Amino acid sequence: MDNQISSNGRVARNAVMLSVRMLLIMVVGLYTSRVVLSTLGVKDYGIYGLVGGIVAMVSFLNASMSNATSRFLIFNLGKGDRQALDKTFATALFTHVAIAAICTVVIEIIGLWLLYNKLVIPEGRMDAAFWTFQASVICMAIVFIQTPFNAAIIAHERMGIYAYIEILNSVLKLAAVYVLMVVSADKLILYSFLVVGVHAIIFLVYYIYDRVHFEECRLRFSSDREYMVPMLSFSGWNVFRNLSVSARQWANNFLINIFFGVVLNAASTIATTIYGMIMGLANSVTSAFSPKIVKLYAQEKTDQMNRSIATSTMYAVLIMGCITVPAVLEMSYLIRLWLGRSDIDYATEFCCIQLLVGFMTLVTNVVVSGIMATGKVKGFSLVYGGLYLLSIPLSYIVLRCGVGPLSTYLVTLAMGIVILVATSLVLKRLVSGFSVGKILTAFLVNLLAVAVCGIPSVLIHRNMEESFLRVVLVSAANVITLSLATYFVLLDKDSRKSINNKVRQMLKLGK
Image (tube, rainbow, N blue to C red; front, side):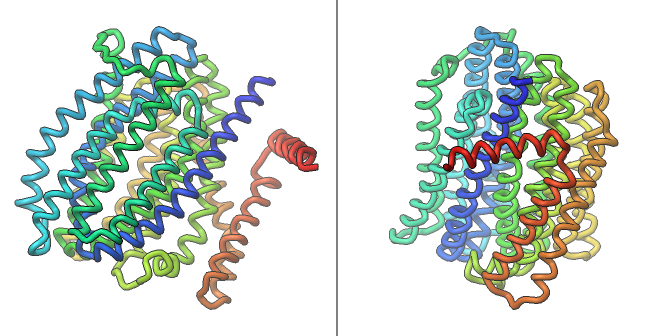
């Protein structure tokens, strides 16, 4: 019991550290995005998002290998197998380097063909788009090679260090923005290669920390079939799933470019930026729970694993609700406050729908953590990836029918609901005791709590003039009402008792 309490405490601390990290990253990220948009202009900003999206198409490979690396490292830590841990990391490092080299060659061929033959680039900006593309390819390669080092920190649950390094990442990007403002050059090309420099520095920091603190993180390669085959098999089935996610994300941007031009790509990039930041904050909770879920499965404690999935779902949705309600109500004002302008068509609408999609995505990610723990990802990947790919032709059809640019995001919202249900059904087949009804009921109950607790915020929004004070009051009302509802209604007796004890300890320390 004491071990369970200690484990829960560690998870809570990790969640707090990751949440603080994301809050700071959001603040810095929002400011840097505003300056980048102002400095580059709407067209170059749209080009940056569009061309970078070509490279992002292969991120499915990195995501697949990242999932495999994290899963096998955490699993071996749970088992306490030091030899397997060493060989798993060496195999993962070899595989990531190999994939980085292969992807660089392939994307140079396919990506440049798309750039010069299919994309709509404003006249006179093709050279800038070319160098932006090259910088994006370099960043992609660095991220591939860095992934095993990130996974090692997460597997060891050193979330504090992970948070500090990512905060440094944001600070360096802020410094890059300052250089962009004071140096006279082609701003788009300059910014692209400044981002390359930031990626290189962060990789070195990860490498040095891991090399010093973790025995398995040595710069050595292994192609041991005993370890490579299970990892590649796991990754292989994930490739289709992650390819489908990347393809859907870039296809939406591509379809918007084809039907409406590069200006709406800027709106799409703004929506993607905000969505990524907010989802990163909410996913901090599920990231903190994920190692625990995998370790519990490795130790064959499926009952505790199922409870951990349910708890992670509740906290993730509630945190997402704390952010989403005020963000949706005040989105137009926040975009103007952030970017200094509000004349970018559809930016507000894209952002709001993306945040609603976030609820489904977040709970799906929690369920996926349970599936990843089992290592049985074949059927799940086919179902998940197939549903994501289905949204691409559906989006094309509604756009051809003249419905408008919002239709692509509404299709994504509807498909998110279907994917959540389908993913839950897959986990039920893999883990005994997992209840689809319970997880969906918990999701709906917490979502209802978010909606009801948002009523005071809606009333404040309607009865005050637009201002920063209104944003503060809307946010405060939402957080307070949702926190009270969580404590008195959603938490069980033991959880409330645990919180009370923590508060008493904090008060004693404060005296």
